[in-house]
Length: 585
Image 1 (cartoon, rainbow, N blue to C red):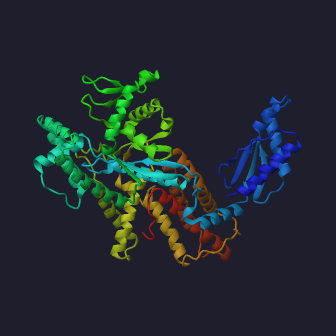
Image 2: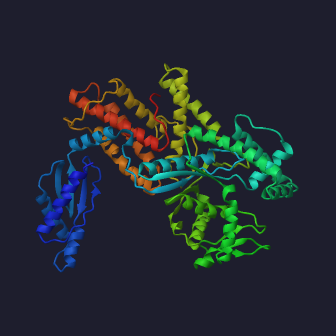
């Protein structure tokens, strides 16, 4: 926000160096750690070391401080900076707190919902997430993938990338054929009701039990799979019809979560190209064909000269049928054929880490230079209370609809206490927004690689690190602004000495653009989740300690603008995480 002033300082430093016969300086600014003042800092150790390399008899540390002191004196007073000092070889420039606060608030209010957004980089990034299997339940374990993928997509988009949100749906495989066998044998002609996903999941759990308990089922399922591969019209028609039931159920879930996709891939779409690709791998000597006794494999460690690092990737079964790897190789190639990507991000369970390394290394062996631009964004599982891992087979699942329903019921109790006078319909809508926010935040406020054990009390805590707490801070800010009909005063320079909550609030608001860039670079929504929690916490301190509407006119004007800026920053941060900001709670 002080780019012009920073550029002016850089030009004066270069001018000093030129006038005194010094080497061209490499100026790298760092943010001064917050201590009640804002500012930037650069060191002169590198410049002193350059002088030493040129043969000057200097002690680098001592010379760095001499240079910093001389340049501080040369700069003199510069508008926008309250203090310029040389400390241990560093040049520290402190911004004027009042001017900095004014500029931060003005910037937020001028940019509105685009605050922190970067101009287009002209670069495409694909984020592949969700990846549900048709004919199975969609439960809380799948939810973390969708929530993480959505947040990463939002953050990357805000950071200036053109994001292609992709979904890769498992619409064929043994699980589908087991379901079809069970349906044809025990449920022929039945159709799902409104809750398609639950019905499909129940039939899958039933099919899996029969498959595991009765040895005679496996050959029947294998025979049915063969009919599918032979494109038997009856089996294909039933597969397409039942697959559509699953897809409709998924779309209901995506609509509920506010998620959309730009490109949907299907396993069935890349199966045949994958099998042909394996034949090409065999011809090129990358894959070894051990059929009919064994499968087709890519001996990665052998080819790369590594030992027990990448191991062996199986790319085709001994009977010639496909595996996940068969299709994932073809899918990766298809993605880069369709889009000119600078990065292809796979949001996939951490347990698939080795497998995806094998896929990327195989693509590298095939000569695809873009293989190094494929990235696995790993995440850990979601457990039920009591550390019960969810499984579609075992039926230990919490379906998304059940989770949202229970969260909404609990959120409604909070809303009814806070706003009993609101119409029931509005209370329900707010409770729904709070419930979804609570679920999403609980999964984004932990590191991707840490296991999440879902807990109702912490997820819906109105006084703790949870979405309702942040949403309530947003609502509180709105309640102040509503009293002035959201008419925010014009830009004003603070005329009073800023209080600690005001200083902290300005500081946290100003960090949002940088944290968005950092979250995009590190693929970590957690950074945004932490920042907006801190912002909400400090706003609540401000709310209780700093009168706004009752303050003196000039103080009132600045504080009203600060409230509006804080509210806007909270809205942006919540939106990046896919969480709505309700007007009341």
